[in-house]
Image 1 (cartoon, rainbow over the protein chains, first blue to last red):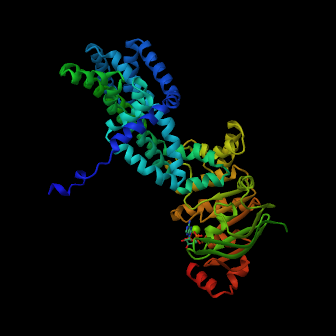
Image 2: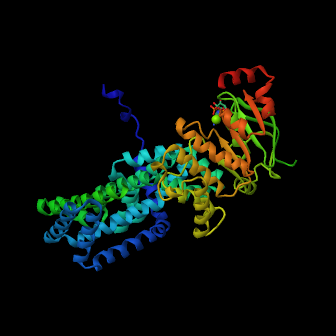
Length: 279
Length: 243
Ligand SMILES: Nc1ncnc2c1ncn2[C@@H]1O[C@H](COP(=O)(O)OP(=O)(O)OP(=O)(O)O)[C@@H](O)[C@H]1O
Ligand SMILES: [Mg+2]
């Protein structure tokens, strides 16, 4: 039956075409995209030096305090011990780098995602266009992002953060849109009837009422960002992800485990603290 | 007398559905008009057109000398002169009662926080919930919430007050406290348009009663005439059901 296979008679050189034309196009765009990535790069490097500048005990105490304020004494002790442990297994610096990456990524997700969420809540058409794009962004295997990101932005920490931003962006857009759409017509009418313009209604009535939902989106974005931290290491992003990646490559289970554990610990700490802030 | 609200041949459609059919309606200064009619007759839509929460498609609406059209600047000027009270209160749940009353003063009238809080407390005292000022809407009874909503509207010092079934969502024992506030307001000389089925209130304060059915103003009379000799069959039927 092999004679029925189309590939026996013809070949469509898609892979070659992309390699030949798309690649050149991507490379040609690099200077533009480098410019776009400057704010991300600056934020990242400032945060990274900030986290590495603040003395370790102070950071531990700050997190323990935040944990205490939000979740009580038990979780504060857990946070305290986890961070001490992270230093004991000698991945403190990597942890700070990962934190800087995550915080930068989440910050930019908010800066990009909240306005897009607002726009989607105002316009059904925009929402309709947005929805499949977000679906695609969330379902494409995260590895696939890495190729265009590397082509456009090169390798290193900043491209790593960009890959994280793309991967983690969807929830904050979705939940901003959802939260705003759930604000009842009645309270918006009340605002309008008092003479408030669109901007006042948005900032003083709608956004505060949607805040819980928006924060839930930020929390999900944060968790996605952490899960992407390892994959971003593939394109030269440092931090704990690099330990995992290098450890895997060398079959150094110990190093991979320590890196993975660090990510899990800060994921738990970030998650619990932000969950409580939402409430 | 000068008409502060003037609707001429106003028509409105929701899609195919003709909600307001050639409405001619006017209210003069300090007049109190009660609007009644069966559910779905277009009462809410009519008063929501007066502060442009709904847009009409044909005819003209003039409020305090300003024509309602696509001119946005006009709209916010008109809205700050026309207070509205809703059936469901619609207080801002994330703000205290006091903040509910100061929000628009600060952001629309650009008053200072102190000034606006002072005025808010004056009006909250007037509706007798000044002791609840720092609570949130969810902590108040329905009657208290509705009085807070009236105070909130009054804080903008409107010339006209629109009420859309202000007591329909209330438990019977709370209706009186809200109606008392409205009666006071009426006696103070406020121009009022009130959609309500509280015929006792209509008899006490209304100068005129308007009966609507299926998007038409079917009957419009001085209060005493309206109750004593209604002409239209539908009005008679409605009154016999409600009284
Ligand atoms: N946004 C809307 N879109 C479509 N139809 C609407 C809309 N708002 C109201 N309607 C319809 O218009 C008609 C009049 O509505 P309206 O709310 O003005 O009636 P009403 O007299 O206030 O009734 P009720 O006593 O129930 O409050 C109703 O049939 C309603 O279903
Ligand atoms: Mg109604």
